[in-house]
Image (cartoon, rainbow, N blue to C red; front, side, top):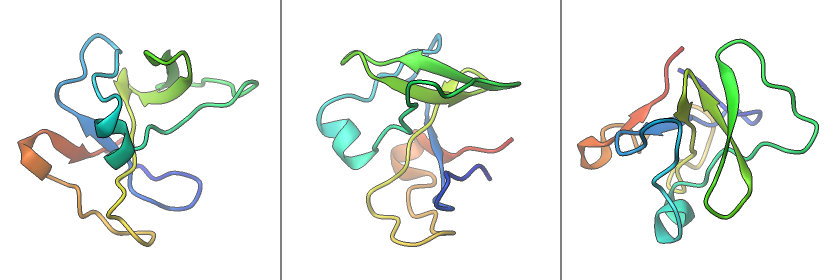
Length: 91
């Protein structure tokens, strides 16, 4: 499974298409996007997409990545399978 720098699970959202995030506003409050910072370099299957608010988000293999607010510690995967549209990201 893919994790962020703190070891938290990363997720993909089935409604995202064409390298565009469809998770904004309230959705992004529950599923915080994995933000990319200025100067971050994309490499291999890791890319960056521009969100509707203009911020940058990491994507893997074209799929935007998110964390989940209910995951409390590294290794938690409580969002996997949520509403049949959220899935733990795998390399």
